[in-house]
Image (cartoon, rainbow, N blue to C red; front, side, top):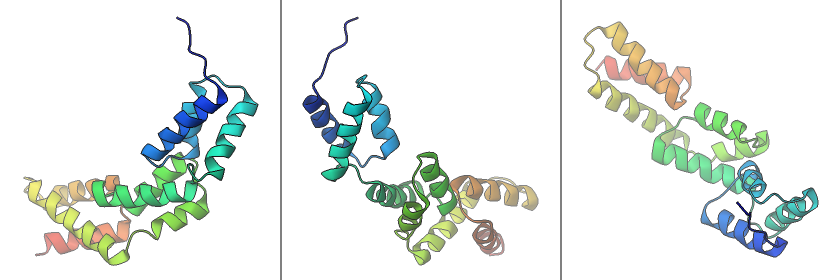
Amino acid sequence: MQRKVFTIEEVKRKMEHYCVYQDRCHQEVEEKLREFSLIVIAKEEILLHLMEHDFLNETRFAQSYARGKFRIKKYGKQRIIRELKRRNITAYNIKKALLEIEEDVYRATAFELAIKKNASLTESNTFKKRKKLFDHMVRKGYEYDLINEAIDAVLNK
């Protein structure tokens, strides 16, 4: 199969569109650039262009990622940190991203999550129920102290 050949300008426009559609991290953009089989100098030129014109901004990506995953999927801070590290986001940007999550809303969400999961459990054994609740909250990425506090509040009603 013959591969289509693109000019640097065409690839720039395609990558601009890719970055405008949704905030992207450097890793995602580099993976997308690999599809075009470019030489190193061309890749660097395109990446530089995207950063200079604010199409590619790691801080903005980290902040929107943290906000979205918390609001939509109810991820805890530990899960968000783990996912951002997996995308090679710097510690500074991870710290900035976590500031997007208000502490009182975060705590309330953890308690809501525990209440919702508890309502869906049919387990009669208190220890097994506690373990299932705990495991669910850990998978979501909440801190152990907050998990225990939420579970105690839910089970001791």
